[in-house]
Image 1 (cartoon, rainbow, N blue to C red):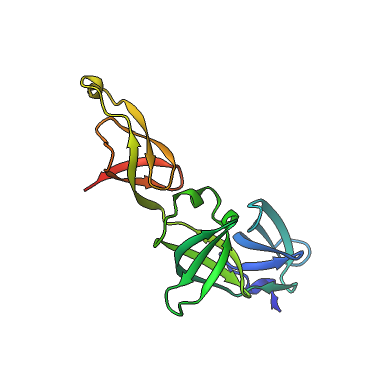
Image 2 (spheres, rainbow, N blue to C red):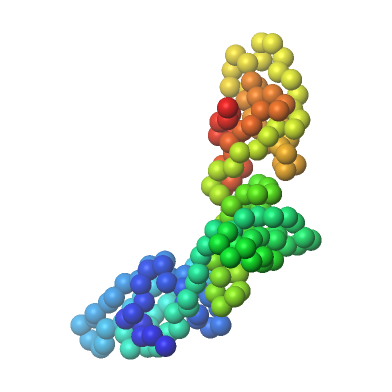
Length: 186
C-alpha cells in the first residue's frame, strides 16, 4: 500500500473496489489542521468524475496497469479476439471497452489495450482509420460546385457523409472519435 503523498496524475487507483484514473491532484495546507490532498478521479468503467479528499498519510492502492499494442484478429459474439504483437498470445476483449470506435475496427488493425491483473480495463482504436468505400451514389454533374455531401458505405458497413467527388472503390481517412470523413487516400 502506498500513501496519498505518493499519488501522481495519471496513476490508476483502486478506490471503493472501483478503478479510477487520477485526473487532477492538489496539495492543500490550511492555516488550521493538517495538510491534505484534493483530487478529481475518473471512474474507468463509467467515465464519471469523482472528487476525493485524502489525508497525506492515508493509504491508497496504486494499481499496476500494462498497456500494449495488439492486433485485432476477428469478432466473436460480444468480444473482439486480439493477439499480442510480441508473445502472440490471444485475448478476448469485450466490444464495450472500445465504445463507439468499435465499429471502425477491421481485421489486421492495431489497437491499444490496458490490462490490470490480467483483466482488460481500457481499449482504444486508432485515432484515424483508412477504409474503402463499398457503395455510394455517383455524383451528378453540377452538384460539385458547393460543399455538398452524400452518404457512402464503408467496408465495415458504416454509413458516413463524404464529398461528392468520392466514388465507390476509393479509400478514405476517417476520424474514429467523431466518425467524420477527413480526406481521400491515394
